[in-house]
Image: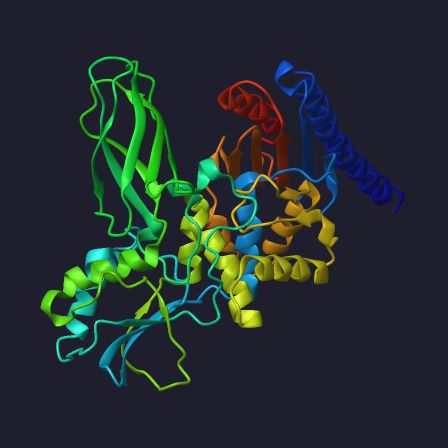
Length: 459
Protein backbone atom coordinates (compact mmCIF):
# COMPACT_ATOMS: atom_id res chain seq x y z
CA UNK A 1 0.00 0.00 0.00
CA UNK A 2 2.86 2.38 0.90
CA UNK A 3 4.45 1.63 -2.49
CA UNK A 4 1.16 2.57 -4.24
CA UNK A 5 0.99 5.92 -2.43
CA UNK A 6 4.66 6.54 -3.26
CA UNK A 7 4.05 5.94 -7.04
CA UNK A 8 0.94 8.15 -7.04
CA UNK A 9 2.84 10.88 -5.28
CA UNK A 10 5.64 10.72 -7.84
CA UNK A 11 3.15 10.99 -10.68
CA UNK A 12 1.60 14.08 -9.12
CA UNK A 13 5.05 15.56 -8.68
CA UNK A 14 5.90 14.92 -12.34
CA UNK A 15 2.62 16.46 -13.53
CA UNK A 16 3.11 19.48 -11.28
CA UNK A 17 6.71 19.87 -12.44
CA UNK A 18 5.68 19.70 -16.10
CA UNK A 19 2.96 22.32 -15.64
CA UNK A 20 5.40 24.53 -13.82
CA UNK A 21 7.86 24.17 -16.69
CA UNK A 22 5.27 25.38 -19.21
CA UNK A 23 4.44 28.32 -16.95
CA UNK A 24 8.10 29.20 -16.55
CA UNK A 25 8.73 28.95 -20.29
CA UNK A 26 5.75 31.19 -21.04
CA UNK A 27 6.84 33.64 -18.37
CA UNK A 28 10.30 33.90 -19.89
CA UNK A 29 9.03 34.16 -23.47
CA UNK A 30 6.43 36.77 -22.55
CA UNK A 31 8.97 38.85 -20.66
CA UNK A 32 11.23 38.86 -23.70
CA UNK A 33 8.23 39.80 -25.84
CA UNK A 34 7.31 42.77 -23.63
CA UNK A 35 10.92 44.00 -23.64
CA UNK A 36 10.96 44.20 -27.43
CA UNK A 37 11.19 47.72 -28.92
CA UNK A 38 7.89 47.20 -30.74
CA UNK A 39 6.18 46.96 -27.35
CA UNK A 40 7.84 50.03 -25.82
CA UNK A 41 4.53 51.91 -25.47
CA UNK A 42 2.17 48.95 -25.77
CA UNK A 43 0.07 46.95 -23.36
CA UNK A 44 -0.28 43.20 -23.81
CA UNK A 45 -2.31 40.44 -22.23
CA UNK A 46 -1.90 36.67 -22.45
CA UNK A 47 -4.16 34.20 -20.67
CA UNK A 48 -3.77 30.43 -21.10
CA UNK A 49 -5.67 27.60 -19.43
CA UNK A 50 -5.58 23.82 -19.57
CA UNK A 51 -8.60 22.93 -21.71
CA UNK A 52 -9.20 19.63 -19.87
CA UNK A 53 -9.03 20.87 -16.28
CA UNK A 54 -9.59 24.64 -16.54
CA UNK A 55 -6.38 25.18 -14.57
CA UNK A 56 -4.64 28.51 -15.29
CA UNK A 57 -1.35 27.87 -17.10
CA UNK A 58 -0.32 31.51 -17.56
CA UNK A 59 -1.85 34.89 -16.72
CA UNK A 60 -0.63 38.36 -17.55
CA UNK A 61 -3.10 41.26 -17.49
CA UNK A 62 -6.08 38.94 -18.00
CA UNK A 63 -8.43 41.40 -16.28
CA UNK A 64 -7.33 44.43 -18.32
CA UNK A 65 -9.79 45.42 -21.03
CA UNK A 66 -8.11 45.77 -24.43
CA UNK A 67 -9.34 46.33 -27.98
CA UNK A 68 -9.88 42.78 -29.36
CA UNK A 69 -10.31 43.64 -33.06
CA UNK A 70 -11.86 40.70 -34.92
CA UNK A 71 -11.27 38.19 -32.11
CA UNK A 72 -14.50 39.71 -30.80
CA UNK A 73 -16.24 37.60 -33.44
CA UNK A 74 -15.73 34.52 -31.25
CA UNK A 75 -17.98 36.16 -28.65
CA UNK A 76 -20.64 36.89 -31.28
CA UNK A 77 -20.31 33.36 -32.74
CA UNK A 78 -20.67 31.48 -29.47
CA UNK A 79 -23.56 33.70 -28.38
CA UNK A 80 -25.28 33.11 -31.72
CA UNK A 81 -25.06 29.33 -31.40
CA UNK A 82 -26.62 29.57 -27.95
CA UNK A 83 -29.34 32.17 -28.62
CA UNK A 84 -30.33 31.26 -32.18
CA UNK A 85 -29.27 27.62 -32.62
CA UNK A 86 -27.06 26.13 -35.31
CA UNK A 87 -30.03 25.51 -37.64
CA UNK A 88 -31.38 29.08 -37.52
CA UNK A 89 -32.20 30.55 -40.93
CA UNK A 90 -33.20 34.03 -42.02
CA UNK A 91 -36.16 34.30 -44.34
CA UNK A 92 -37.02 37.15 -46.70
CA UNK A 93 -40.61 37.01 -47.87
CA UNK A 94 -42.12 38.38 -51.06
CA UNK A 95 -45.81 38.95 -51.49
CA UNK A 96 -48.65 40.96 -52.98
CA UNK A 97 -50.55 43.73 -51.19
CA UNK A 98 -53.73 45.01 -52.82
CA UNK A 99 -54.87 48.54 -52.06
CA UNK A 100 -56.36 51.54 -53.88
CA UNK A 101 -53.40 51.67 -56.25
CA UNK A 102 -53.79 48.01 -57.22
CA UNK A 103 -51.37 45.14 -56.67
CA UNK A 104 -48.12 46.12 -54.98
CA UNK A 105 -44.93 44.12 -54.52
CA UNK A 106 -44.35 43.48 -50.80
CA UNK A 107 -41.02 42.54 -49.20
CA UNK A 108 -40.68 41.40 -45.59
CA UNK A 109 -37.09 42.24 -44.66
CA UNK A 110 -35.25 39.95 -42.25
CA UNK A 111 -31.75 41.40 -41.98
CA UNK A 112 -30.34 38.36 -43.84
CA UNK A 113 -26.64 39.12 -44.45
CA UNK A 114 -26.30 36.29 -46.99
CA UNK A 115 -28.97 37.61 -49.39
CA UNK A 116 -27.27 37.78 -52.79
CA UNK A 117 -23.92 36.54 -51.45
CA UNK A 118 -21.51 34.79 -53.81
CA UNK A 119 -20.27 32.41 -51.07
CA UNK A 120 -23.13 29.96 -51.67
CA UNK A 121 -24.20 28.98 -55.15
CA UNK A 122 -27.89 29.21 -54.27
CA UNK A 123 -27.52 32.71 -52.80
CA UNK A 124 -25.68 34.32 -55.72
CA UNK A 125 -27.49 37.41 -57.00
CA UNK A 126 -28.26 35.94 -60.41
CA UNK A 127 -29.84 32.86 -58.84
CA UNK A 128 -31.91 34.87 -56.37
CA UNK A 129 -33.16 37.16 -59.14
CA UNK A 130 -33.89 34.17 -61.39
CA UNK A 131 -36.07 32.56 -58.70
CA UNK A 132 -37.91 35.82 -58.12
CA UNK A 133 -38.50 36.25 -61.84
CA UNK A 134 -39.97 32.77 -62.05
CA UNK A 135 -42.09 33.32 -58.94
CA UNK A 136 -43.68 36.43 -60.48
CA UNK A 137 -44.58 34.81 -63.81
CA UNK A 138 -48.26 34.61 -62.97
CA UNK A 139 -48.52 37.96 -61.17
CA UNK A 140 -49.36 41.32 -62.70
CA UNK A 141 -48.38 44.27 -60.53
CA UNK A 142 -50.41 47.43 -61.07
CA UNK A 143 -48.42 49.82 -58.86
CA UNK A 144 -44.85 51.10 -59.23
CA UNK A 145 -44.50 51.24 -55.45
CA UNK A 146 -42.53 48.59 -53.57
CA UNK A 147 -43.67 48.11 -49.99
CA UNK A 148 -40.85 47.01 -47.71
CA UNK A 149 -41.86 45.79 -44.29
CA UNK A 150 -38.86 46.68 -42.12
CA UNK A 151 -40.84 46.91 -38.91
CA UNK A 152 -38.79 45.76 -35.95
CA UNK A 153 -35.44 46.80 -37.44
CA UNK A 154 -33.31 49.82 -36.70
CA UNK A 155 -32.63 52.20 -39.58
CA UNK A 156 -29.05 52.73 -38.34
CA UNK A 157 -26.79 50.71 -40.63
CA UNK A 158 -23.42 51.55 -39.05
CA UNK A 159 -22.74 51.02 -35.31
CA UNK A 160 -21.49 53.82 -33.09
CA UNK A 161 -17.73 54.07 -32.88
CA UNK A 162 -16.82 53.06 -36.43
CA UNK A 163 -14.44 55.49 -38.11
CA UNK A 164 -15.06 57.35 -41.37
CA UNK A 165 -12.05 55.80 -43.13
CA UNK A 166 -13.56 52.32 -42.58
CA UNK A 167 -17.25 52.69 -43.34
CA UNK A 168 -16.93 53.43 -47.08
CA UNK A 169 -14.80 50.33 -47.69
CA UNK A 170 -16.03 46.75 -48.07
CA UNK A 171 -14.93 45.69 -44.57
CA UNK A 172 -16.91 48.61 -43.15
CA UNK A 173 -20.25 47.51 -44.60
CA UNK A 174 -22.86 47.88 -41.88
CA UNK A 175 -25.91 45.63 -41.56
CA UNK A 176 -29.23 46.82 -42.93
CA UNK A 177 -32.69 45.30 -42.62
CA UNK A 178 -32.43 44.54 -46.36
CA UNK A 179 -28.87 43.51 -47.28
CA UNK A 180 -27.72 42.67 -50.80
CA UNK A 181 -24.46 41.16 -52.17
CA UNK A 182 -22.93 41.50 -48.70
CA UNK A 183 -23.50 45.24 -49.23
CA UNK A 184 -20.35 45.25 -51.36
CA UNK A 185 -19.46 46.57 -54.80
CA UNK A 186 -16.21 46.90 -56.77
CA UNK A 187 -14.66 49.99 -58.35
CA UNK A 188 -12.48 49.52 -61.45
CA UNK A 189 -9.72 52.13 -61.70
CA UNK A 190 -7.24 53.25 -64.37
CA UNK A 191 -4.06 55.01 -63.30
CA UNK A 192 -1.74 57.27 -65.27
CA UNK A 193 1.68 56.62 -66.79
CA UNK A 194 3.57 58.95 -64.46
CA UNK A 195 3.73 59.34 -60.68
CA UNK A 196 1.26 62.01 -59.67
CA UNK A 197 -1.10 61.47 -62.63
CA UNK A 198 -4.79 61.39 -61.86
CA UNK A 199 -6.65 58.08 -61.58
CA UNK A 200 -9.94 57.56 -63.43
CA UNK A 201 -12.97 55.57 -62.33
CA UNK A 202 -13.72 53.19 -65.22
CA UNK A 203 -16.87 51.54 -63.86
CA UNK A 204 -18.39 49.78 -60.87
CA UNK A 205 -19.49 46.16 -60.55
CA UNK A 206 -22.40 46.04 -60.23
CA UNK A 207 -23.52 49.42 -61.56
CA UNK A 208 -24.56 51.57 -58.60
CA UNK A 209 -28.07 52.90 -59.05
CA UNK A 210 -28.13 55.48 -56.26
CA UNK A 211 -24.59 56.88 -56.07
CA UNK A 212 -21.85 58.39 -58.21
CA UNK A 213 -18.12 58.31 -57.50
CA UNK A 214 -15.50 61.05 -57.56
CA UNK A 215 -11.81 60.13 -57.79
CA UNK A 216 -9.25 62.14 -55.86
CA UNK A 217 -6.68 59.40 -56.35
CA UNK A 218 -3.20 59.86 -57.76
CA UNK A 219 -0.75 57.46 -59.38
CA UNK A 220 2.15 56.19 -57.29
CA UNK A 221 5.27 54.17 -58.01
CA UNK A 222 5.01 50.59 -59.24
CA UNK A 223 4.81 48.04 -56.46
CA UNK A 224 3.24 50.42 -53.93
CA UNK A 225 -0.01 48.43 -53.96
CA UNK A 226 -3.49 49.42 -52.91
CA UNK A 227 -3.48 52.58 -50.82
CA UNK A 228 -6.93 53.72 -51.89
CA UNK A 229 -9.74 54.44 -49.43
CA UNK A 230 -13.40 55.04 -50.14
CA UNK A 231 -15.24 57.74 -48.20
CA UNK A 232 -19.01 57.97 -48.03
CA UNK A 233 -20.60 61.37 -48.74
CA UNK A 234 -20.71 63.87 -45.87
CA UNK A 235 -20.34 67.34 -47.38
CA UNK A 236 -20.51 66.21 -51.00
CA UNK A 237 -23.17 64.26 -52.87
CA UNK A 238 -20.68 61.77 -54.31
CA UNK A 239 -18.65 58.87 -52.93
CA UNK A 240 -15.01 60.00 -52.82
CA UNK A 241 -11.96 57.79 -53.40
CA UNK A 242 -8.66 59.09 -52.02
CA UNK A 243 -5.09 57.81 -51.80
CA UNK A 244 -2.93 56.13 -54.43
CA UNK A 245 -2.64 53.11 -56.70
CA UNK A 246 0.41 52.13 -58.80
CA UNK A 247 1.08 53.67 -62.23
CA UNK A 248 0.10 51.92 -65.49
CA UNK A 249 -2.85 50.01 -64.07
CA UNK A 250 -5.80 49.62 -66.45
CA UNK A 251 -8.05 47.34 -64.41
CA UNK A 252 -7.21 47.98 -60.75
CA UNK A 253 -10.01 46.83 -58.44
CA UNK A 254 -10.96 48.03 -54.96
CA UNK A 255 -14.12 47.16 -53.03
CA UNK A 256 -16.55 49.45 -51.27
CA UNK A 257 -19.60 49.32 -49.01
CA UNK A 258 -22.99 50.11 -50.53
CA UNK A 259 -24.51 53.17 -48.83
CA UNK A 260 -28.04 51.92 -49.58
CA UNK A 261 -28.16 48.16 -50.23
CA UNK A 262 -31.97 48.04 -50.10
CA UNK A 263 -32.25 50.50 -52.99
CA UNK A 264 -29.58 48.57 -54.89
CA UNK A 265 -31.55 45.33 -54.52
CA UNK A 266 -34.86 46.88 -55.60
CA UNK A 267 -33.27 48.43 -58.68
CA UNK A 268 -31.56 45.12 -59.50
CA UNK A 269 -34.95 43.44 -59.21
CA UNK A 270 -36.54 46.02 -61.50
CA UNK A 271 -33.92 45.32 -64.17
CA UNK A 272 -34.28 41.54 -63.76
CA UNK A 273 -38.07 41.57 -64.04
CA UNK A 274 -38.12 44.09 -66.90
CA UNK A 275 -41.67 44.41 -68.20
CA UNK A 276 -43.12 42.26 -65.40
CA UNK A 277 -42.68 45.01 -62.85
CA UNK A 278 -42.43 48.72 -63.58
CA UNK A 279 -40.80 50.09 -60.46
CA UNK A 280 -40.22 53.77 -59.88
CA UNK A 281 -36.47 54.20 -59.54
CA UNK A 282 -36.95 57.65 -58.02
CA UNK A 283 -38.67 56.22 -54.97
CA UNK A 284 -36.66 55.72 -51.77
CA UNK A 285 -35.37 52.19 -51.43
CA UNK A 286 -37.69 51.52 -48.52
CA UNK A 287 -41.30 52.60 -48.34
CA UNK A 288 -41.99 51.38 -44.81
CA UNK A 289 -45.14 49.34 -44.72
CA UNK A 290 -47.50 48.64 -41.86
CA UNK A 291 -48.65 45.02 -42.29
CA UNK A 292 -51.66 45.61 -40.01
CA UNK A 293 -53.34 47.65 -42.77
CA UNK A 294 -53.85 44.60 -44.96
CA UNK A 295 -52.51 41.08 -45.00
CA UNK A 296 -49.96 40.47 -47.75
CA UNK A 297 -50.27 37.30 -49.80
CA UNK A 298 -46.84 35.67 -49.70
CA UNK A 299 -45.86 34.00 -52.97
CA UNK A 300 -42.13 33.39 -52.44
CA UNK A 301 -39.66 33.02 -49.57
CA UNK A 302 -35.86 33.21 -49.72
CA UNK A 303 -34.09 31.31 -46.93
CA UNK A 304 -30.54 31.90 -45.81
CA UNK A 305 -28.04 29.08 -45.25
CA UNK A 306 -28.11 27.71 -41.69
CA UNK A 307 -26.37 29.56 -38.88
CA UNK A 308 -23.46 27.11 -38.65
CA UNK A 309 -22.65 27.88 -42.30
CA UNK A 310 -22.94 31.64 -41.71
CA UNK A 311 -20.57 31.43 -38.74
CA UNK A 312 -18.13 29.38 -40.81
CA UNK A 313 -17.68 32.35 -43.14
CA UNK A 314 -17.92 34.92 -40.34
CA UNK A 315 -14.76 33.50 -38.78
CA UNK A 316 -12.93 32.06 -41.80
CA UNK A 317 -13.03 35.33 -43.74
CA UNK A 318 -13.75 37.66 -40.80
CA UNK A 319 -16.81 39.22 -42.46
CA UNK A 320 -17.79 42.21 -40.34
CA UNK A 321 -21.24 42.44 -41.94
CA UNK A 322 -22.16 38.98 -40.61
CA UNK A 323 -21.15 39.92 -37.08
CA UNK A 324 -23.21 43.11 -37.20
CA UNK A 325 -26.24 41.33 -38.67
CA UNK A 326 -26.11 38.65 -35.96
CA UNK A 327 -25.94 41.08 -33.06
CA UNK A 328 -29.00 42.90 -34.43
CA UNK A 329 -30.73 39.55 -34.90
CA UNK A 330 -30.25 38.72 -31.21
CA UNK A 331 -32.21 41.86 -30.37
CA UNK A 332 -34.87 41.22 -33.02
CA UNK A 333 -35.50 37.65 -31.88
CA UNK A 334 -35.37 38.34 -28.13
CA UNK A 335 -36.75 41.88 -27.87
CA UNK A 336 -38.69 42.41 -31.09
CA UNK A 337 -36.47 45.26 -32.33
CA UNK A 338 -33.17 44.67 -34.12
CA UNK A 339 -30.65 47.31 -33.09
CA UNK A 340 -26.97 47.13 -32.26
CA UNK A 341 -27.34 48.67 -28.81
CA UNK A 342 -30.02 46.17 -27.79
CA UNK A 343 -27.98 43.30 -29.21
CA UNK A 344 -24.93 44.38 -27.22
CA UNK A 345 -27.00 44.50 -24.04
CA UNK A 346 -28.28 40.98 -24.71
CA UNK A 347 -24.74 39.65 -25.25
CA UNK A 348 -23.48 41.21 -22.02
CA UNK A 349 -26.46 39.96 -20.04
CA UNK A 350 -26.16 36.44 -21.45
CA UNK A 351 -22.56 36.11 -20.31
CA UNK A 352 -23.32 37.76 -16.99
CA UNK A 353 -25.80 34.95 -16.38
CA UNK A 354 -22.98 32.50 -17.15
CA UNK A 355 -20.79 34.05 -14.46
CA UNK A 356 -18.73 36.64 -16.36
CA UNK A 357 -18.40 40.17 -15.03
CA UNK A 358 -20.30 42.20 -17.64
CA UNK A 359 -17.62 44.91 -17.45
CA UNK A 360 -15.20 42.42 -19.05
CA UNK A 361 -17.25 42.79 -22.23
CA UNK A 362 -17.26 46.52 -22.85
CA UNK A 363 -18.37 46.17 -26.46
CA UNK A 364 -20.03 48.43 -29.03
CA UNK A 365 -20.56 46.16 -32.04
CA UNK A 366 -20.63 42.53 -33.13
CA UNK A 367 -17.53 42.38 -35.32
CA UNK A 368 -14.76 44.14 -33.38
CA UNK A 369 -14.24 46.87 -36.00
CA UNK A 370 -14.96 49.66 -33.53
CA UNK A 371 -11.79 50.89 -31.78
CA UNK A 372 -13.98 51.61 -28.73
CA UNK A 373 -14.35 47.91 -27.86
CA UNK A 374 -12.61 46.64 -24.73
CA UNK A 375 -12.54 42.94 -23.81
CA UNK A 376 -10.45 40.95 -21.34
CA UNK A 377 -8.47 37.87 -22.33
CA UNK A 378 -10.03 36.15 -19.32
CA UNK A 379 -13.51 36.68 -20.79
CA UNK A 380 -12.50 35.38 -24.20
CA UNK A 381 -10.94 32.24 -22.76
CA UNK A 382 -13.98 31.58 -20.56
CA UNK A 383 -16.24 31.87 -23.60
CA UNK A 384 -14.01 29.52 -25.61
CA UNK A 385 -14.02 27.07 -22.68
CA UNK A 386 -17.83 27.25 -22.50
CA UNK A 387 -18.11 26.54 -26.24
CA UNK A 388 -16.07 23.37 -25.86
CA UNK A 389 -18.82 21.84 -23.68
CA UNK A 390 -21.64 22.27 -26.23
CA UNK A 391 -22.88 19.83 -28.88
CA UNK A 392 -22.48 22.47 -31.61
CA UNK A 393 -18.77 22.92 -30.78
CA UNK A 394 -17.46 20.99 -33.84
CA UNK A 395 -19.17 23.55 -36.11
CA UNK A 396 -17.62 26.44 -34.20
CA UNK A 397 -14.18 24.82 -34.08
CA UNK A 398 -14.33 24.16 -37.84
CA UNK A 399 -15.03 27.86 -38.45
CA UNK A 400 -11.73 28.93 -36.90
CA UNK A 401 -8.86 29.59 -39.33
CA UNK A 402 -5.48 27.97 -38.86
CA UNK A 403 -2.51 30.19 -38.13
CA UNK A 404 0.89 29.10 -36.86
CA UNK A 405 -0.36 25.50 -36.81
CA UNK A 406 -3.14 26.43 -34.36
CA UNK A 407 -6.92 26.82 -34.60
CA UNK A 408 -7.24 30.50 -33.82
CA UNK A 409 -9.22 33.61 -34.69
CA UNK A 410 -7.05 36.59 -35.50
CA UNK A 411 -7.82 40.28 -35.16
CA UNK A 412 -6.30 43.40 -36.68
CA UNK A 413 -7.18 47.08 -36.50
CA UNK A 414 -4.90 50.09 -36.24
CA UNK A 415 -2.08 49.27 -33.77
CA UNK A 416 -4.01 46.24 -32.47
CA UNK A 417 -3.13 42.58 -33.05
CA UNK A 418 -4.89 39.65 -31.45
CA UNK A 419 -5.12 35.86 -31.48
CA UNK A 420 -7.37 33.54 -29.50
CA UNK A 421 -8.32 29.91 -29.83
CA UNK A 422 -7.28 26.33 -29.16
CA UNK A 423 -4.20 24.18 -29.51
CA UNK A 424 -3.31 20.55 -28.79
CA UNK A 425 0.39 20.04 -28.03
CA UNK A 426 2.50 17.13 -29.23
CA UNK A 427 2.25 15.52 -25.80
CA UNK A 428 -1.58 15.65 -25.90
CA UNK A 429 -1.99 18.67 -23.62
CA UNK A 430 -4.87 20.91 -24.69
CA UNK A 431 -4.82 24.66 -24.26
CA UNK A 432 -7.23 27.55 -24.64
CA UNK A 433 -5.70 31.00 -24.93
CA UNK A 434 -6.19 34.66 -25.76
CA UNK A 435 -3.35 37.01 -26.68
CA UNK A 436 -4.12 40.73 -27.18
CA UNK A 437 -1.66 43.53 -27.97
CA UNK A 438 -2.63 47.21 -28.14
CA UNK A 439 -0.63 50.26 -29.20
CA UNK A 440 2.42 48.51 -30.61
CA UNK A 441 4.68 50.28 -33.10
CA UNK A 442 6.27 49.15 -36.35
CA UNK A 443 5.00 46.61 -38.85
CA UNK A 444 2.24 44.19 -37.93
CA UNK A 445 4.01 41.35 -39.75
CA UNK A 446 7.04 41.71 -37.48
CA UNK A 447 4.86 41.71 -34.36
CA UNK A 448 2.96 38.61 -35.49
CA UNK A 449 6.20 36.63 -35.72
CA UNK A 450 7.05 37.63 -32.16
CA UNK A 451 3.58 36.67 -30.91
CA UNK A 452 3.90 33.29 -32.61
CA UNK A 453 7.22 32.75 -30.85
CA UNK A 454 5.44 33.08 -27.49
CA UNK A 455 2.58 30.80 -28.55
CA UNK A 456 5.07 28.21 -29.83
CA UNK A 457 5.74 27.33 -26.18
CA UNK A 458 2.34 25.59 -26.20
CA UNK A 459 3.39 23.23 -28.99
